Every structure is written in C-alpha cells, then in structure tokens.
Amino acid sequence: MNKPIVPAFCLIVLTLCGFSASANDNEGLGDITFTPGATVDFAFESNGVTLSGIFDVPKGDTKALIVIVHSYGETNVRNWISYSPERKRFNEMGIATVLWDKPGLGKSEGTFDINQPVHESAQAVLDAIAHLRRIEAPGTQKIGLWGGSRAGWIAPIALSQDSDIDFWISISGTSAEDNYTYLLLSNLPHEGGTPELAEQLESEWREGCRLFRTQGSFPDYLIATETLRANEYITNMRGDWPNRVEYELRQLTCKDGSCPKMDDDLCEYVWIEDFDEMLSSLDIPVLALFGEKDLSVDWRKTRDLYVRTIGQNPNASLSVHSFPDADHGLNITKTGSMKEMNALPQWMKVKTDGYFEVQETWLRNQLTRTVSR
Image (cartoon, rainbow, N blue to C red; front, side, top):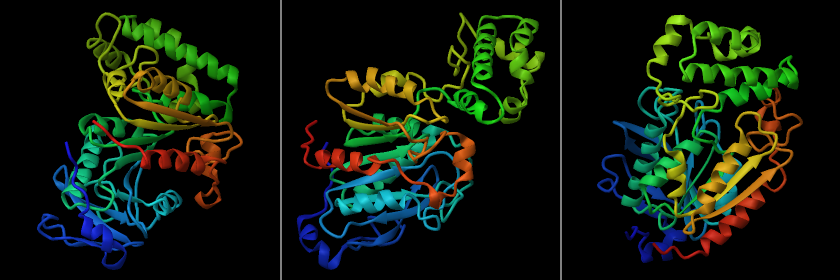
C-alpha cells in the first residue's frame, strides 16, 4: 500500500512557509501549520475521545516521523517537556516526533485509567498515525515507533495491525507476561531482604503457582508459600493473598495445568496471548536497548524472546544493545533498584554512555534504507 507523502511543492518551500493541514482534512480538530523548527499542537480522535499532544517539526527536510509511545503512569507532555532530549536529537537528524497525553490528562479528553488496556493504547497509536497520514503531516513517508517499558506491549500490537509502519525502537521492553514478580523479588535485597531470601521466596512463589494450576489443595498452598506470604515488603507491595474461597474459585478456570491469561511459571498475568507469534510476524527493523541493572523488567527474558522471534525472521532485522551500568530508564545507576530510581530527581538522572549514539547510528541506516513490501 502506498503511503501519502508531503507534496513536492511543500517540500521545496517548507523552510519558508511551513506545511498547513486544512480544517476539512483535520476533521474539525483545527488547522495545523507545520512550521519548520516549531513544536505545534496536535489532536486526534481515538476510542471516542479527543487526545491532545504535540508535534515537533525539524528545521530542515523531514525524512521520517517517530511516534513516541508512553510507558506506565501519568503524562503531561507539555508541562513536563516529556522526552525532550530524545526529541531534540531526533529532530536534529531530520526526524519529526509526535506524542500525546493519555485520556484525562493534559489537554486530552476522557478519564485517566492507569491500567488502560494495552489494546486500547495501541488503538490510539493506530488512530494517531492514520490521522497524520490523512493530513499528510511531515515525515509520514517513513514512520517508526519508539517507546519504553509498557510500550513493549503496545507497539507490537500496533505494528501487527499496520504493516506500513517502518521500524521500531524498543527501550527496556517486555515479555508477554507481567514483570511484577521479577520487580518485587529483584528489589527485595534493597528493601531489607537478602539475595538468599529472594531466591527462597521465588521458589515458594513458583511452587505455589504449580499447586494452584494443578488443582493442589488450599492447605498445601498455604504450607508451600508460608515464608512468601509472611514477608511484609512483598505483601505491602503486592496486596492481600487469596483466601480459600478466592483460591478455589479461580482454580475452576484452570485445566490441564494451565490457567487462562496466566503464565505457567509464576502465575503472572499475560498481557498478550500468542506474543511469540506476534513478534515473529514483524517484518521490520527493530532496535532493542536494555539496561543490565534493570530491576523492574526481566531484560534477559525479553532479550531472549526478541532473539528467538524477531531475530529468526528473515524479513526482519534485530539489533540488540545492553548497557552494563544502566537501570530501567537506561540511566546510569549503582543498583538499578526502585529505591535509587525514585530517590534521584529527574534532572539528576544521566543516560548511560552510548544511549543516544546507538540510536542515532541505527536511525541513519534506516533513513537510507529503501522499504520494499
């Protein structure tokens, strides 16, 4: 499918007059003048509400567009100057960037839901891209997705539904299942526990999951998880453990040792079913960056997942880089713990050496790459 591009005349005069989308093309969401070197307001409709954000226009020719996909939590893209260093570096390369606030935040309509379904978030990405193509925004001739953490679920969903998205940069990406168990146990030694205790609790967690999946009795479950359930840090972070009624009621959904929307190892929630197949089907270049001190997401598990899926697809290309001194946000860290991450103000956080350079080198290759599908 051919993608709409900025008309040749506008490319020639872009540095003089900018590119303006008409109100009719914008479906009542107002005119946009894509002035070179400016950050302009951007709005589109998705899931029944109007979402509002900003679009950064490079000063010179616009070679591509990166759609920034949010991670977990609240947003305020204007007041927080979100992802400012990344946007600046991309713009200097001639790559436009766009991002918007989640529903109910910033100038976006709707109600904020911190646990918004990932498929709903992915639909917003697809709707934004469709709108940008419709108004022939600068850079839509070559579109990529960029995002961290939770975006590791959102981006593949969008990519699997829009084959004309050209590339993906994954920052501290995710496996199919939730990583909360990994987060709790990895951070335990920094919250008054020890590595040995974390190993014991992980073993109990795994045995409790096995008993639950295979119709083990509630008394046996209580015995197997005694130390785990008694740990104050884990319980405070996780919440209450199931009582007998809850345990046995949930067991009714399990069959042949597996439970719907749960992985078979630690009984973590599975965000995307058949995630392996979804990743394997992505016929695009992918750059995956990880911090080796990431105690929020099991980066090794995700790396291995990407290698055996995207990495085995002859129509795709996978580049993986991990940084020994980086945390979940790819900032330089001593421990990578949540305690350290939360204690350090954002302005004091420093990206690991090579974070920007690796992306820029990879992107330059993508900008010269001819897409043939």
